[in-house]
Length: 155
Figure 1 (cartoon, one colour):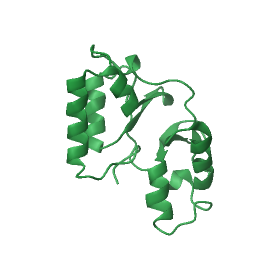
Figure 2 (spheres, helix red, strand yellow):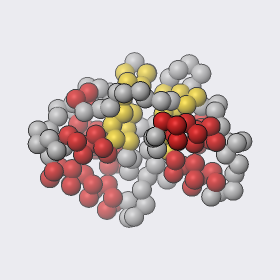
Figure 3 (cartoon, one colour):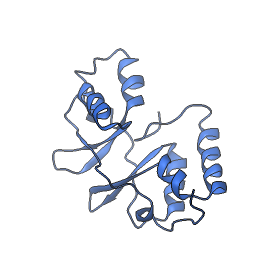
C-alpha cells in the first residue's frame, strides 16, 4: 500500500475501460454487462451521452428483483437515484467526504459532463495511507449501521 496521500482525484481514479449502460437498457442487460466486464456497477449514460447516475448489482437485486419487479421490464434509468460525482481536480479528502456523506462505495469522476473515471474502494485501498483508509472505512460502514449504500445513492 502506498504511504503517500495523493492530492487530487485524478491521481488515483481508475480510467481503464469504464463500461457504461444507456439509461433505456433493461436491468437484465445491465446484469449481463456486469458479468461480462467483471464489475459490480455501471455508470448510466443518457441519450446525450451525459452521465445520469450509476447502477449496482445490489440495486438490481434489492430494488428490482426483491421488490417483485421483472428486470427485463425495468430500465437502468428507472433505478438511477442520487447523482453524486466529483471532478478530476477535486481533492481526495473532498471525494472521501462525498462518499461518506452519501454512503457510496464508488464515485464517478466527471469532466465537462462526461465520465472520465471512477473512484472505488479498491482505488482507495491502493493509494491511501493505512490509517486514513481505516478511518474512512470506519466512518462509512459504522454510520451505515450495517447497511451499505449503493454506488449511485443511499438506499
